[in-house]
Length: 173
Image 1 (cartoon, rainbow, N blue to C red):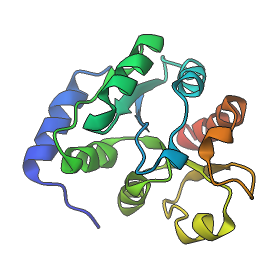
Image 2: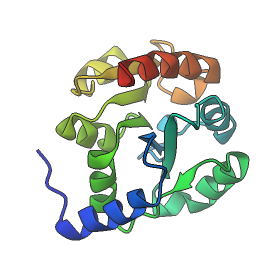
Image 3: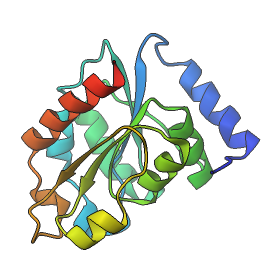
């Protein structure tokens, strides 16, 4: 289990209180620890623009080093709610409070597993890494690149849109 500090929990709660309350909060993490797990903004935009904004608040989470990439995505998708994390513990608190996480395979997928937050994960094709780092949340949908491909950028937006449709059904049961 993870226990975000009280300051991070308060910071996140204040942010969440400004969102429409009748919607499910989905965190979209665009950051990854290595370039093989970065997905193009054009693909993220296609996915985000397919999400029903009457059902979901999509919260954009990103590492400070990727603020320009996040700003570009926000320009493409004005319905995004920008979360300015001050630290990794703020990200943990946000994921703990969220109804779901969409993310490449990163440490945040594993923090979501610790909170049993539903996950839609983008994974490279390697069986070794997928099996080793498979999310442990009860609700999970995984999209993988070709088994011989270690880059998630080769996953098509259409594949993730279809996966989100399955994810949405699981979240709204």
